[in-house]
Amino acid sequence: MPKFVVEADGGSRGNPGPAGYGSVVLDPVTGETLAERAEYIGVATNNVAEYKGLIAGLKAARELDPDAVVLVRMDSKLVVEQMSGRWKIKHPDMKPLAAEAAKVMPRAQVTYEWIPRERNKHADRLANEAMDAGKRGKQWEPSNSSASLAALDASAARALAIPQGPPGDAAKGAAAVRAALASGEGTRTRAGAAAGARAGSAPAGADTLFGDPADLVAPADPAAPASGPDTAAAAAAVPATGASTAAAPAPTAGQGWGPDMGTPATFVLLRHGETALTPQKRFSGSGGSDPELSAAGRRQAAAVAESLAARGTVQTVISSPLRRCRETAQAVADRLGLTVTVEEGLREVDFGAWEGLTFAEARERYPEDLQAWLDSPKAAPTGGGESFASATRRISATRDRLLAEHAGRTVLLVSHVTPVKILVRLALGAPPEALFRMELSAASLSAVAYYADGNASVRLLNDTSHLR
Image 1 (cartoon, one colour):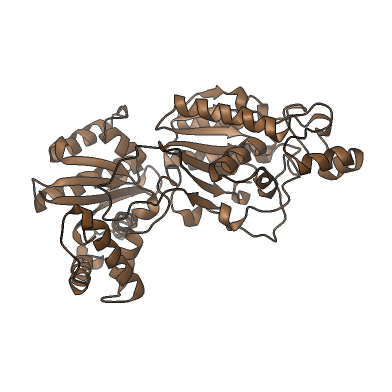
Image 2: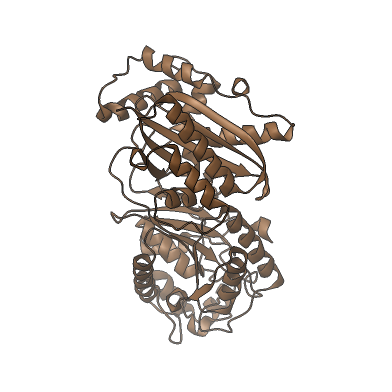
């Protein structure tokens, strides 16, 4: 029975705004492009455009072979989860679109898989081409796009004598095509470059929240000064090796039929916006004055709220009990139409007698205690503060409980420097001293996707200067 891979995407420049979709039908063995669809649909939301892209892709697959088994791959978690039956469809605009998509082909012939945005570049490009055409008052035409991909990919496959064997040979065939196109063998054109991008190997699940990693991973700069304000101990930027990691390789164009690890639980980690203490780089933990957001912090919270609303993936908002986090979380929740749940386990550590001091002031007043704290995660701040070892146990327990409660969901955790760093460190498998090598800007976002096999992938964003 024939198998097709359908990759679909949709976009809206304004959400709602001028919108379009793109879809491509691929041969799962060779990665060959079999059909392309794209259309400008006028003013609509991202989700409407994504559903229309799905419908067009399924119809294109049906035209090729109505009896085919189809794997749909999209970077829209909403569409994938709703069409898989795991999420309810509540929005009135989505219900008829989902029903139409379900009728295109028998449900038993179609399965769905979420992929990161960077592995959906072909469909994304088609959607953008459709929107660009709409801006010019025209509709998308295949002759102006990448329709020649099919012939080029097919000729490359034939030139390499790729075996057309059982599905188990798919990985070899697709890998050979990508290797040849990337190295310049066979046909190396715009289409070949696109095929290479389409079969990229970014960490699976890393972009449950985010989008193109080029927009999101802050380049590590070992020479850059640290600016993690809640504790001045952030003495160096994140090492280059810590910017993004994944424990398991991502599926390629021909490997979508392997074991299903299921949808990961994704924690989107948001550090609260600035307070009056933040730019002064003073210790500000759970034992201090519990400051409110500054004017800059409120602007940051509003900007993050808009960004997360545009992405549309967060389902639950959970906050530290401290005021600066609750205010940041409420700004996001109000924009998303959600409520805020307060979680005691997400609070910042208690810095004891160092609360309100700069790092230099703490060193001057408590030099031995501060040095001991830098030397060992078991050492606590002067005056009964909480050690990093104790905080790690608390935060690990909180993480495990929240993972059990929110399996397969995308949850926003609004917290502080130390809890976020600990969650990232644990996901990376880094040693405790890594906490002193991370910079975490106010209102910065990170995301950790947790998989059923215990592995995790991490995505970081630190530059929030545009949010001020």
